[in-house]
Image (cartoon, rainbow, N blue to C red):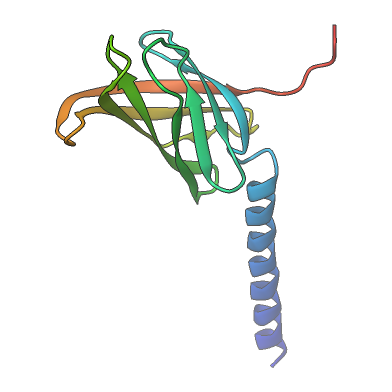
Length: 149
């Protein structure tokens, strides 16, 4: 009976530890929540992205002719995530010509201050037909407050 109680106690302790780790990951530095400077490794292009606590993902490429992107993200494991973001590509007349969808699978570094991810961008016509697919790797660093110089 003592052995059985010890095993049950150990399982309860393990379960509470896992709950604590998950909670700390959701609210601490080991989450995507916050703002990030992302670099596309192959081109050097820079992107600003924000991930909110509610699962919203926003980004800005800083490129003329592309709207701010909006999407969603979720945690898939300890320090791993999936995200999707959609933006519009405008023609010279200012009208939407294409839809750009980016899908990533960020994996946080152990310190929670950077991540890397494969990235797949699909560019579609307004009818949904994919006209181009781009594959890349991105790396990012967390934007943190700094003291006034």
